[in-house]
Length: 266
Length: 266
DNA sequence: CGGAGGCTTGACCGGGATCAATCAGGGTGG
DNA sequence: CCACCCTGATTGATCCCGGTCAAGCCTCCG
Image (cartoon, rainbow over all chains, first blue to last red; front, side):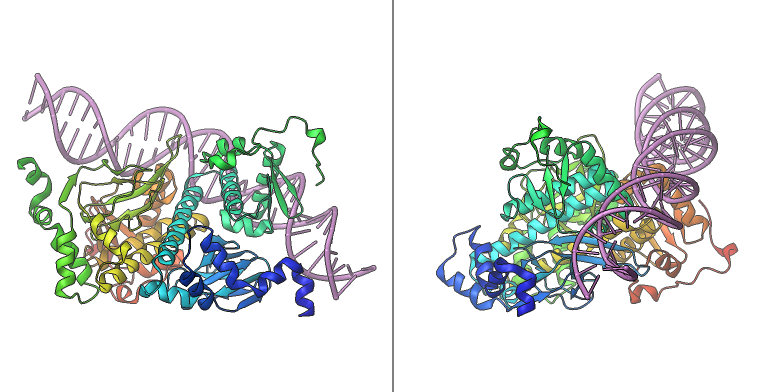
């Protein structure tokens, strides 16, 4: 527990002890929940587990687990026999992985240090129709949202160039993190290595690196150690035919006119 | 109706009059249905509609319709502002498109002449939990299967070369058509133009054409006017790291030794 | 201080896109 | 019945995006 505290810091430690309350938060942020529904969620949420980055959470082919991500990032991925890897989707804090109970050929692994809780019991209730309607509807909504993101990603991989692909993905990520309250202003966390990014975008590490530099050179983004700063949201969106959320567009989206005043510590 | 008969031929005409029985067939092939469940399906199935190839069935952004495909092939697709198109998934006879009721940015359009029926009423029942459990379970199973195929497709587009991609897709298609009883022996129908194939595989028409020729030259497949013949299933599967269904592997999968005896009319 | 993991850079190559022309089949109108 | 055309398949020539190989570099840690 000593080492744990070192690794996590205080806010993560709190989450570690309150996986179920975090789960309730995620649900109640979208609909009003009856006290009974809240009780169900609290009751059914498994204990929080901690894993280090790189660890495997669900092996491919196994009966898929339903995991509620409390903190840290994970990925559903597929690895080919020759080692090539494709990251199929990212699992961010507040997301649930394994909404369906069918086993799949994909595995889930931690991209950073993660804390998560098993919500297989909740999934069983939903699948059996033995849960408050509000919760069932939300569950289906999550599934629909995840599938919509898969379709976006398909379009990215199939028809966008490397530059467009990267821009498009960064914007999607920004919207997701913003809605989860994890992006602040025009800054979002970026704990992924370039290798992980490349495996998600279907690019080589080297080329992804060059693409990122291009985006910086064009003053569309700026990168800090484990963060990305957006300098021109509309420019990015135009570049890749992205339909920006109006709410997010409201933030300063014009290119910054006086670069001298911006902290450009890289 | 005169013209209709010309276009369709007799078997399609029968389907045209029996969309609901076709729907029942698809469900009952997978589980034993109670008489009540059968009645529900028959009751809830919309009238059959006919559209020509190229027609739009669901416009992007519209409230998505739930469509049961009776005959012909359709596609869920996305079109970028500059005209690039990505076909996200194919809808084959027996498939249901629009399992979720959220509107999406994708459209659905007919790739060939199609006959389909609206099953929005069935979807509503399922979503509201007011349907026989057997039907609800199957509905969720369809959704899971579709999502699994999306993940396969993501891996194809992200990490496979054009040759692998094409081989992989042909095998998936063969398995789907076989299970639907639409492939006979090592022959499967292929009503798609090379442009449609290319839009699905994220390739250019020209390159797709060359890839197909490569596959023929390597004696992996053979093509007839609107069909594809598999000459070496295991070879194809090895080429693209595909886990072939054992049942299908059982069919003659060794390369044909005496090419002289095979009709090579191209 | 050394080592490892991750980022950056340069040189080179090849897969696949693009442009352009030709060919084949099938439907249409004269 | 035949000339015509329109769509889709094919082929060749050329280009460039993005992969690969190989160093070097930085930073964090033990």
